[in-house]
Amino acid sequence: MVRKVKVLLDTNILISALGFGGKPREIFKLVLDKKIKAISSYVLLAEFGDVISKKFPKLAGDLNRIQKQFRKNMKIVKPSHSAHVLKDEPDNRVLEAALEGNCDYIVTGDSDLLNLKIYKNIIILRPNDFLLNIQD
Image (cartoon, rainbow, N blue to C red; front, side, top):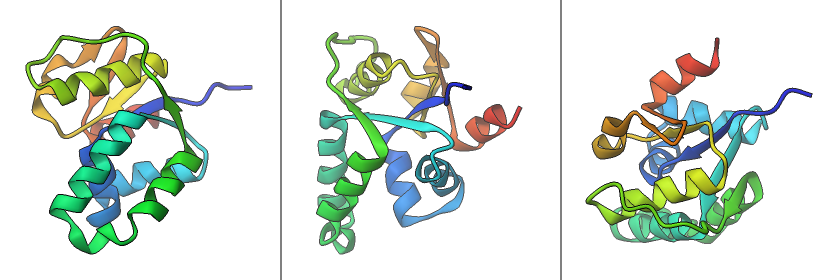
């Protein structure tokens, strides 16, 4: 059996997938279709909830349903190690969850994460580059 690609979808990608579509939605559809395995953490899901509540109040009413769907379709990890790589502490939570989940990729639009390019063998890409990478 071929191992599924494991990917951490950063909060900005999840929000884009829900609210705007495009490549982030294509990637999330791969998760729903069980073609790739998505990883997240309780901290990142909480961050997602905070951002939705503050910046997208129209979606906030569906937040419980959305988060339930995420938990159903993602492996939720509890990182056992702290990362202190980037100045923006929330970005370090992304690295921690990806490492704990043994991810192959982090998909993000965050420039600080993207500038790392790779973290402990985890490739960090924009959505379009990720889709191109996994089609090989």
